[in-house]
Image 1 (cartoon, rainbow, N blue to C red):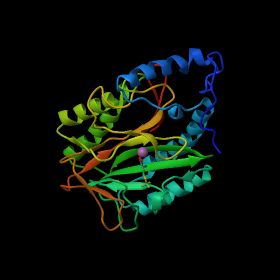
Image 2 (image 1 turned 60 degrees about the vertical axis):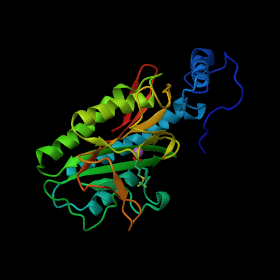
Image 3 (image 1 turned 60 degrees about the horizontal axis):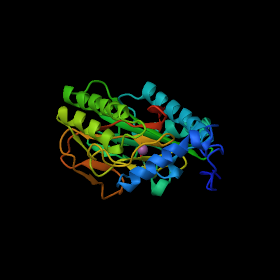
Image 4 (image 1 turned 90 degrees about the vertical axis):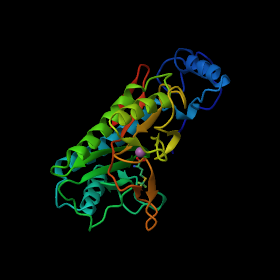
Length: 296
Ligand code: MF3
Ligand code: CO
């Protein structure tokens, strides 16, 4: 059992519920006062449940250790001729050897330990023996780990051999989008500020941002609130406060933003126009001054 937060009424001088060690009135109390004011004028504000405690953050970091190690292994070993089924086997074995559980396995019926999305697959590709990586392919490997009940989530793109300049640029711009978004993550900025930075960079490069799928809070569960949209307008959406933990994972398409779900497996998402899609994912923690990268 993970204790989510201290729900009892707190006195201003009590230790803050985030377990920073500071008194409530020097930590999250002034933040909550400001949130109340913002909420009154219609701004979307986070619930206290979204603030991770010090212990929870430690747990999420330990989970992230595995997630990062798994993706580091994939980075070193992925190449032409490997099947996505083999990538699934690596992920399963390394995660278990390190004391974790692959979060995707059996998640809402997902059949494998990792998502592998090639070329025009946007996300949620299912590893298979007959999907063998070819020179010029671009592939997203999306790993998520449970360790001692805590969740971590991140993904990276890989280019198999050499690809076309246009696909290479898509991969590079998708990564840049994540870090443009990250620059906007700090207390009192909003999800829309982050989304705006991402969309502006994608558009400036002639690419589109997927509208129907976003990121998510992550830590005590695989997918928790808030839903993180990458298409909101600047200054809209939920504001950030210290202790929030969520993913930045915009899907960037070379052509249309439109997508569809594979009717045979009900999982794999494709671009409508068959043009390639790229995605990088990091998990971040909002700090007092900005954000810290938890997974990459
Ligand atoms: N890892 C994906 C994400 O970034 C979610 C995959 S759900 C699964 O949110 F079931 F397909 F694994
Ligand atoms: Co995610």
